[in-house]
Amino acid sequence: MIDPVTDEMLSVFNAWRETMGHKRARMDNARSKIIRARLGDGYSVEDLCLAIDGCAASAFHMGENDTGQRYDSLCLILRDADHVDKFVRAGEHAHRIVAEQIAKREALHATEEASLPTPEKAAAFRRMLGAVRLRKVA
Image (tube, rainbow, N blue to C red; front, side):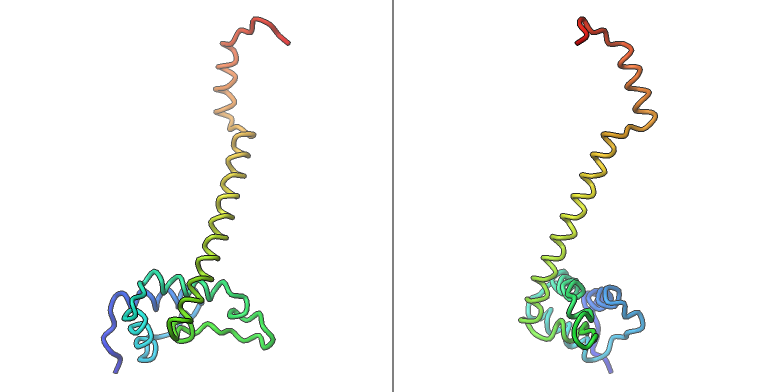
């Protein structure tokens, strides 16, 4: 019999299932106990989800190692405070990298949009240009 599972616990479990691609995984006693223990230690749902992201960002833990073995179990990620802290740091770093990539992409698109006007913007510019009268042409 599984201990009662809270919405917070389900949020963490479902984040792990989705992030790691374990669609068929089910909540069992070991998983419910480890999530409950870390929440009891004062970690928030967001902290635990960030730790899951940190594990997902680790090439080693995702199977890029000598054995090709993935080390992505929820019980490993949430084993103890040291594991959670290590994976949270990795998650924060991964989130920073993604945010920087998004910012660069948005800046690139903004530059492209500025240099390649839409037909509507070009027509409006031509109308405005037609109203301009330069005193002196260089």
